[in-house]
Picture 1 (cartoon, rainbow, N blue to C red):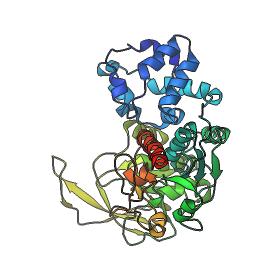
Picture 2: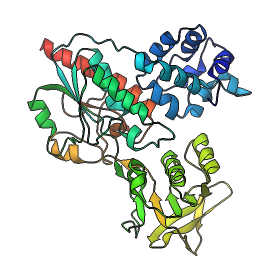
Picture 3: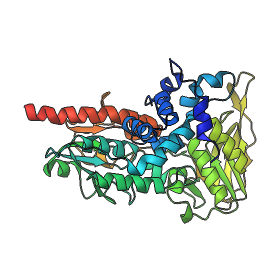
Picture 4: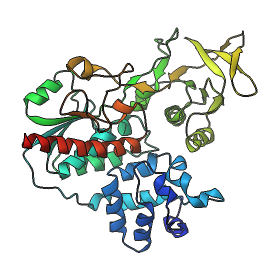
Length: 408
């Protein structure tokens, strides 16, 4: 273990106004969790975490802690913040398999959850606890969504997602893998078959394109496709990654682990858009960084860039005349992604914004009564903890909706 969690727990000041908790998007009861842990009640600490955030075990590994809980820790003002993520991970990992999810007796109502990502898993657990019979439909063969197919193994061990699947099945959730709603089955079929409420958490799986010449060449790939199954790709020894967000860091670090000798990330701006830690790890792993480079086209030899000219204040003031051909065996485009349109095109009345994201109110209600949504398909590519926090509100709204149908 890189950090001794007992030592870290003993450093916690148990502040009266816990800024760490304020910095957490899901308001994790951090001081109470640490006090229970220090008091020897590991089970209570774990149950506290799971009750607040059923994906606590995942969030302890993949959250941007430096900008959330740890970034708000008072000790970080003059020294080193308490390593809250390690404490949370130790507790969550140790007690996860023995946590018993208490569920109310079945109420005879069925709920369809489309998408087995962070939002779908959260909704499924919360509504099953309330007595609903939940069926998850997912286009892929394994649960987890972006956790399974968009985050590398070295950041999130896939065995954790198998443990979540076991937990879901253990409380009675039915899972239909390899079933994309909007193809053979549509939302109207779910309504016909008696699902009283439907949740959409399909994520964002359509890569955003550059729109430049050469994007369809055989040596060009998209980050979201590559991360889903890196073993399927033969990228060669030199790889150019266009983009510098967290996903681009995952791509670069994965490519290096699969044998590439030279990996360079290119950004139009003057700094990385990824978290400080992810950027630092990519550099340590051996990735190179080039700033002020705007893609012009991609050739069989690699990407061609224009160099952006910035003034002293960092404002773009022009482009250098000469273009630069970069020689790379493969180019991976990592500039975010948007939602696929199958559901919208096959569901009358389901509306989306101009960029394809589903339109909802603050509690996840879509433009069709009884159909709800949350996660990236509503907010765009965001963090896991934000998807979970939003989904908690949506689960409550779904519960209220189905109970209100009884009163009519």
